[in-house]
Amino acid sequence: MKRKLTLSAASPRAKAEHGTSLLTAFREIRELIVHGRLSPGTWILEAELAERLNMSRTPVRGAIHWLQREGYILEHRNAKKSRMIVAPLTNEDANELYIIIGRLEGIAGRGVAALPAADRKDICSQLQKLNDRLEVISKDRDAPPGEIFENDRAFHRLIIKYGAGARLTTLHKAIEPQTERYWRLYASSIIKDLHLSVAEHDEVIRGIHAGDPDRVETGLQTNWLKGAERLGHVIEIFGERGSW
Image (cartoon, rainbow, N blue to C red; front, side, top):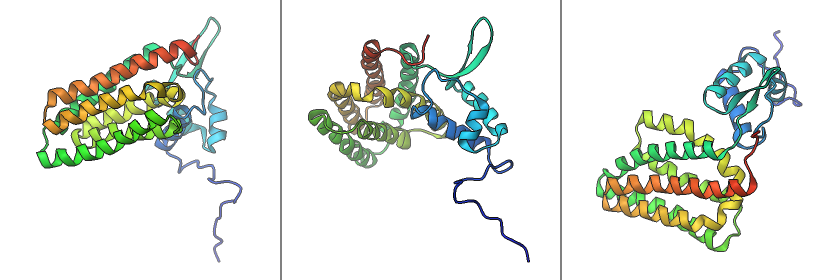
């Protein structure tokens, strides 16, 4: 009789020499970085990561190189040697990311504005519900930063959902987690300016309702550019993270 192979209850996942994919390693390491469990400036040690994730080193090594290409990990050189580190959070990087994602969402916003009136009305209703919650939070200031982030992200993802094609969606998915790093770290310090973002969202909603693609595109780009300015003020106060 053949005996079944069972996993130990102490290990949530057996170390998979063959079954662990590069994509799985990439996603899990990226999540550690985005959620701040690998802090900006932290040295990346392949062996330690493989042990932490209970994976073989091969997919982890590939994931590190992939994350380097996407800007989550950088090579830090000094006179003696170089090391891989988690990319620092800097004002310059934030500005660049916010400009890029604002452009992408602006293009998607034009697509939303071109939809039939009945569809736009339904989308506006969904967007308004999310923005109304953000307005309540901006007045009460008693919600956890995570709720602010989730509602704001949901607002912007609706624009992509209804207005972006496959290629634009792929580009947005590559950039969004990098902006999330800044949001998660600095969100609690931005809540005092949340009402400004709410007003910018209202302008986007009005543009969609009117079917005005220029107004929607400008509104989304403005929201991200102003967001970068607000974030920049916070970074100036609390400092960049992981930078030398």
